[in-house]
Amino acid sequence: MQETKPPMPRLTESERQELLSALDGWTLVEGRDAIHRRYVFDDFNAAFGWMTRVALIAEQKNHHPEWFNVYNRVDVTLSTHDAGGLTRRDIELAQRMDQLAAGLAKA
Ligand code: H2B
Image: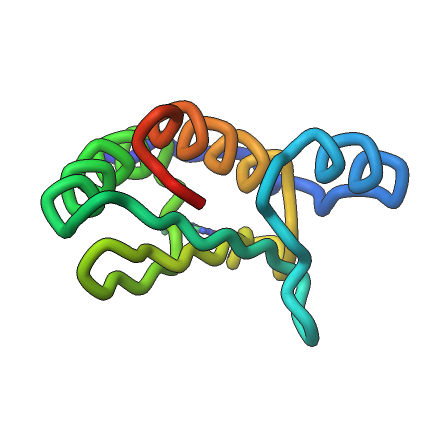
């Protein structure tokens, strides 16, 4: 059964400045409250292996990425749909994605 979580508030201005500047490679998406990062791996095997590990964490957290994969490239957009914008859940998932990509991703 999926866990029920209280509504998550969107990040405040000062939280954005602090938390987003600590994330490497992530940029704000134009026109919506979301962040984006492109990961480039050696090949499809590395990219999809990483996606599989991320998928298990996303399911555990009940927080899911918007992502698009072509061969060795994965474009990820994170936003909290229930909150209509960025929350700490997006920052946490971005950090986990970066940890899992460390030493694997070229960009
Ligand atoms: N993922 C993301 N990125 N944002 C959400 O608000 C969200 C989610 N909500 N995954 C969850 C699932 C919700 O739709 C279910 C019903 O718990």
